[in-house]
Image (tube, rainbow, N blue to C red; front, side, top):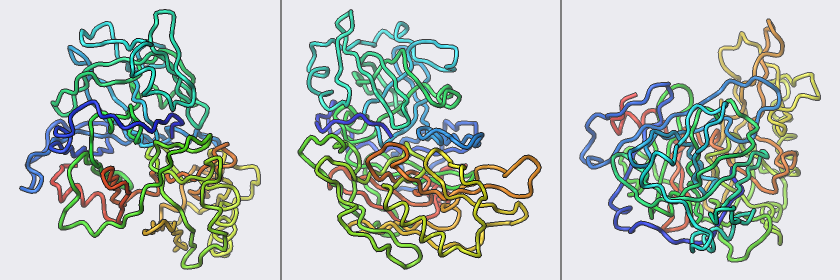
Length: 447
């Protein structure tokens, strides 16, 4: 989840291109990309198919990083002649960027000196002056009078460099003069994972996001659980006979500039939370952003798990503990906190073939509900100790107060096997439960 945002809406490319273009991107949970897809139904005959990879590192410590724990990555080419890059797909970020300076910890970079179509952005351009006005850290002029940006993230990671334009190639389609950040310095809280990618593709509603620059009217994705496939669609409409009706909740907008409200985020209105069918007894006002903007609810593919403001998290934690008493055994280590914010963890015998039946947690939004159940409720962190017969599983909701985040965040772990649609024309997010591996098969995307 990035903290950069913008409320401008100035697409760089004609809407006619975007409305006629629909990408289906294969989410491939293997180490090999597939460059060709089999023929598909007449409903999707003209679609361009690109590979998307899910990177899932194994937890190695109690305090894993907040950003980039699991990343959805897309491979494409940039520049003239084209250079291969891999970018994290992030609906919580605006500015797309690439590593442009070779460092010892980076396996892949974009070299602007090798691209004849690369153009750095001057400080005097409207791009630098107006389209970056909502960045939390204002842009500046470097000694060469180029537009310099610093982007920070919720886990205290940061990246900085200059804005520039170059040609991005998506599925063979050239997107000239695409604005991005050509970054040369920064700090990462997870260098091992960041070294596996070349950069990040911002997908929020901001002026400089990839979605806005392409003028994409809507996009959808379906993330599978386990080692199988899923899909991501850019543009077009989601009208498949095998897909159930989508339940929509409107996007929340504000014209005011508030210190803790990200206007470019996909913000929805959370109204309550249920455990089984028991609604937590909380005032509705606790879910509404206050006068500073704190308390917004964001849907973010760049964050793995979901995080709730402290009082709501505590109420959910206590009710879940009460309903699982005698079913699960609490971890006998009061100091164990997963990802610095998830402190409800259990000992689970390794002899169990699967988790026992657990009470579902339902997030109630305006006009729609998202039900989290079964394996999405608990996440295996590792073994209690080396050679132990017990494993540690942690509740997949965390306390955002412990991360210093004044917001509710719906991460992509809770979006597994849920068809998610981001409808920018009608300003809404739609979703429905489905088997994402079967969705891939029905679209005839080979695993």
